[in-house]
Image 1 (spheres, rainbow, N blue to C red):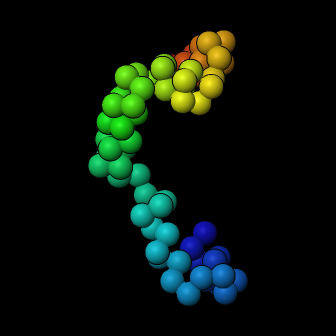
Image 2: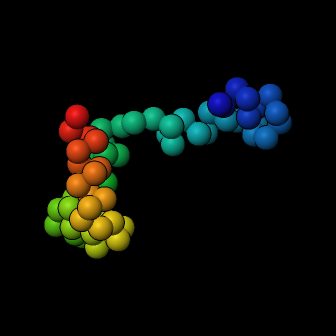
Length: 66
């Protein structure tokens, strides 16, 4: 993707996107810490923070636990 952006002339330094494309443990930990501080749990975040209903939450859970 970065090479395509550079070739298309859309970005001079597409390597600036690297932090947005990486998965870093510190980023994930920080996000989960904040989620737990603000909502107390992932199910409460889904319901209150995102407005996901119980049926959809159950479907998500089933898909992730396959």
